[in-house]
Each structure stands twice: as structure tokens, then as C-alpha cells.
Amino acid sequence: MGVGDDGAILMAEDTARGTGPIVLLGPPGAGKGTQAKRIVEECGVPQISTGDLLRSHVKNETELGRLAKEFMGRGELVPDQLLYDIVAERLRAPDCERGFILDGFPRTAAQAGWLDAFLEHEFFDRSRPGKCLPFVIRIDVDYNELWLRLTGRRTCPLCGRIYNVHLQPPRVDELCDLDGSQLVTRNDDREEVIRERLLAYEQQTRPVAEYYQQKGRLVSVDGSLPVDQVAEQIFHAIERHARDRC
Ligand code: AP5
Image (tube, rainbow, N blue to C red; front, side, top):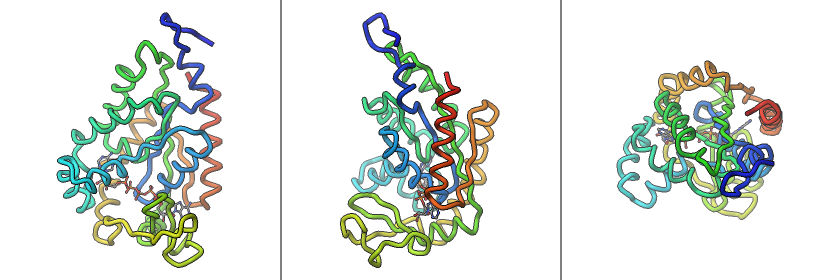
């Protein structure tokens, strides 16, 4: 175990027990949120969903929320510059020190470049020198399956658990299995908006996978399998990465 000049235990050892930064990449409905919650349960590192952060700004009617709402309502990506401050602020929180799962960020090549630069120049400072740039897991699912997943998605507003009326229905129609809350449909899960979100993925987010592929930091998993089997592939990938990294 290494000790820094100021007596702090070095990050390289810490990350060996944590997961390091993980990015979940994939089209809308691929299961990023579902799988992120599995990793949170298994590894105890936080999920950072830019979609959830933005929705919370919209709900609280902040200036950012007001700006983001229009783009989100149309199924378009929110401009890069609006994301950087909220992501940086969240990553500076102490619970991110041993690793974190980014769900929905980065989703443009510019965001991917920003994230690497932020981690290199700020996140891994002298007290956290165990530099380990994000390991990226892309969840692949075909278009027809994505359509079924997005049109059938329901979420518990209280605990955040995700259901699907076609594929993973709750035990009682429209009620959360865990706390009995009435499930809700996301505002952007309307057909015309889903179409735009899938298009934005093809045009703006696919190049992000190429960016990471070129850097040798991308693995793909088959997201069309049942949730447990997708999770199994993801945990194997994380384990392999933990053995090989840094
Ligand atoms: P965001 O909230 O990130 O939405 P998204 O990327 O469109 O992804 P989803 O949350 O729809 O899907 P998911 O992959 O998490 O799937 P889930 O697990 O829920 O972004 C929303 C908007 O915010 C964007 O459109 C954009 O405007 C803006 N935004 C966010 N981040 C941004 C950024 N970085 N830059 C710019 N703008 C940004 O699963 C979906 C359904 O499938 C569920 O019903 C689930 O139960 C089911 N399911 C999941 N896995 C399986 C499985 N294996 N088998 C069967 N069913 C499954």
C-alpha cells in the first residue's frame, strides 16, 4: 500500500478494491440505468446519471433546468457546455473517490475529451494519484427491442426502480413491487421523442464508442439478453479490467 507525502493512502491501492471510473454507453433503452443500479449494489460506488441530474434540475425549475427542458422534450442532446459544471461538481463529491459509474455521460466526442482531461488534470491530483481513466462498457441492443423497452418503461418515483410493462412488469399493475408507489412514464418516452433520441444516439454518440475503441478502453456486451445475463457479462468485464488495469 502506498502512502503519499502528506500521509494519504494512494488511490492505486484504493481503486484495486473499488472499481475505478466506469462509463456505461449505449442507446436509449439499452439498460444503462438498470445495469448501473446492479453495479451500485455489487460494488458500492455511486451511479451518476446525467439524465437524472438534468431531470432534477427541470423539476426544481433551475436556470439549467429551464434551458435543458426544451432539448430534452424534443429528444435532442443538451448542449455540451451545459453539462460540464454539473458533472464536475458531482465527481468532486467524496463518494466518487473509490470509483463511480457514469450513466449517459459522455455522449458526444467533445464530452469524452472533456472527461479525460478533467480526470487527468483535476480528479487525479496529488492526493489521488492512482490515475485510471474510464473503462467503457457499451451495451448493444437492436432497434426493435429498444422501441419495446422505451415505450413500455415505467419508473417508481420513490425508489427509482425501473420496470417494463411488456418485459418486466410489476407484480401489481402500475405499482412498485418494493413500496407500492404508482409508477410513472417518463416525459420523453413518447413515440415521436423516442425516434429523435435514437437518431441523436446514432449521429452523436456512436463516435464516442470509436473514441474509446481507439484508446483500447472499450468492451461491448450483448444487452439483448435477460437483465441477469447482461449483468453477468458486465461483472466479468469489470473483473478482467480490474486485473489488467493501471
Ligand atoms: P437519459 O436519462 O440518459 O436517457 P437515455 O440515454 O435516453 O437512456 P434511458 O434512460 O432511456 O435508457 P437506459 O439505457 O438507462 O435504459 P433503462 O435501464 O432505463 O437522457 C435523457 C435526456 O437527457 C437525453 O435525451 C438528453 O436530452 C439529456 N441528456 C442526458 N445526458 C446527456 C448528455 N451527456 N449530453 C447531452 N444531453 C444529455 O431500461 C429501459 C427499459 O428496458 C426499462 O423498462 C427496463 O426495465 C428495460 N430493460 C432494461 N434491460 C433489459 C433487459 N436486459 N431485458 C429486458 N428489458 C430490459
